[in-house]
Length: 203
Image (cartoon, rainbow, N blue to C red; front, side):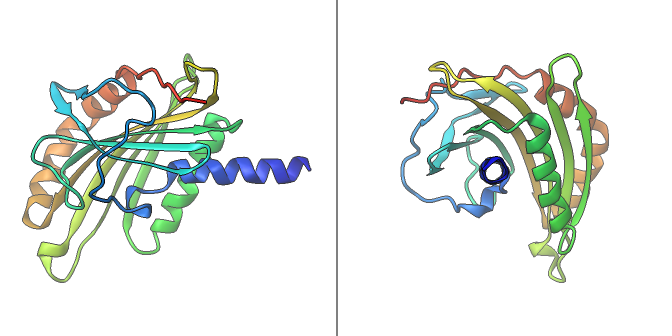
């Protein structure tokens, strides 16, 4: 029974870590499932809630875009996911790394794991992309995933994912990668110190 429970827990964690394309954004109005005051502010930019999903009894996903951005070809997005589970931060990180390793079969993927011993949090700094024969269809994405164990306001314990995703397409990729060399450390630091919103999941 213990093994079965662990398998279920890790499966739930893997839902948390699925890439944003997994569920597919719709045109339905976003629902603030987690009761997060918005918009999200990051590096003096405002990110209103754009899309949300509650695809599993224990999983809540909300995605925020800057003004003028839209799916699927966004340029900057903040994702806040919460999974109610007994999984640890290390469980969540290991699951994400397995996903990224699978993506290496079809994409260019490079990542680094950064731990914070004082808080128990971990960050995955990841660059992935694909160069297409038609340059206009090429895409590169820089993601900073921050994993934190939290207790929601009404007592649910789980793992929160706070993620920043920045993208570039076609001819904009090379300037994007050039800027990233300069800005990467600051982006990681800002995600690490970003205020994590209180989560309210109604029972």
